[in-house]
Length: 208
Image 1 (cartoon, helix red, strand yellow):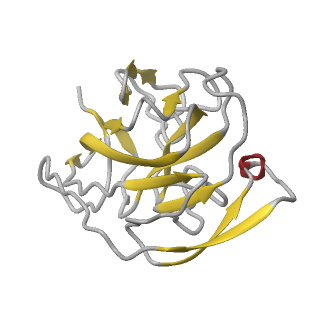
Image 2 (tube, one colour; image 1 turned 90 degrees about the vertical axis):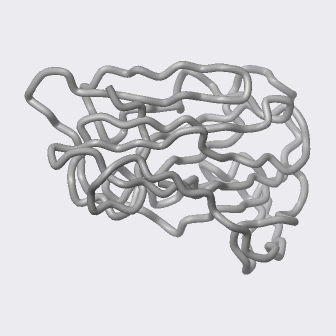
């Protein structure tokens, strides 16, 4: 389970190129209640459709707010499930569960949660997990969580990945002509949390 800072190509059962650190240029109105950027919580190693999950995402509430309305979507992999998500300052506790059949969870590597961000200030925003959990019909899966960083009007100085990333204007999350480039920093370690048995490398959700 990890965080993708640029969602192009991501669907419930599809992953584009995962960007664990990404830089954007932003010049909007701080904390105006509008989504300035969108990120995904994704899972890989997912061979079983989810029945419930926990993905408690942490972030710097002084720089970004997580919107509780669209484009935030906790049910990408679990259409028709009960949304159990709750929101705090600096943590969004995403979770969903099927309580009654039919269960219509979507298996495969892909986006688990889509998160709309309302930006309030420039700087590096580190995203992580306070909890990650994933359960399918096969039982509770083992979960490793991978953090991410969003560089707002800056560069990824402590990026979890290296290389060169395109630095677009925030509007280009849905398409834009203004583009910039920045060299990403060196690799950083990823935190891990094993929640139970199962052949799974990545998942998150509040387990009920």
